[in-house]
Length: 182
Image 1: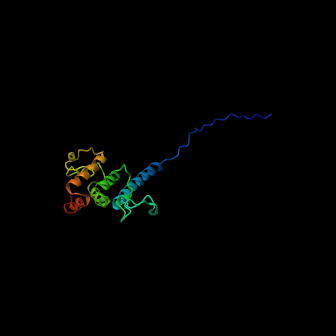
Image 2 (image 1 turned 135 degrees about the vertical axis):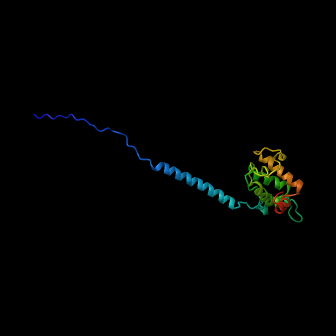
């Protein structure tokens, strides 16, 4: 009879396999760099290109089905429906609606250009040297009697200011072109 001694001892410690993660900080840094560059690139692209939506005169009803309000002569302006090309809850959307009602759509381009030059449509804009603030850069800021977060109030103030001082946004922009302020 053969007896085999089956006792043996394992001296090796069993350790969990650790993955080398030297690439992780590099990958995270690369992702953050790409995100920063993308955000910078997008901002530059937006600043360099104008994203004006052209005002298109559209009728909600085809012409052949439309009932004329003024059957004799030319069609009246009341028949033309001009859709708001902007989000109605944004500063531009509110300005578009109020401007259309106060001055007509023919002055929208001038108002849009004027506010873009003054504040880039940022209701929180504050001029570092003059301390003018808001969408229309009210000077002094207290003149506007609006909180910076209340762009609805700011838009109304700007349009009243333009109406009282210049008559319409086109005249205000003409003045701004001459003096670099309005």
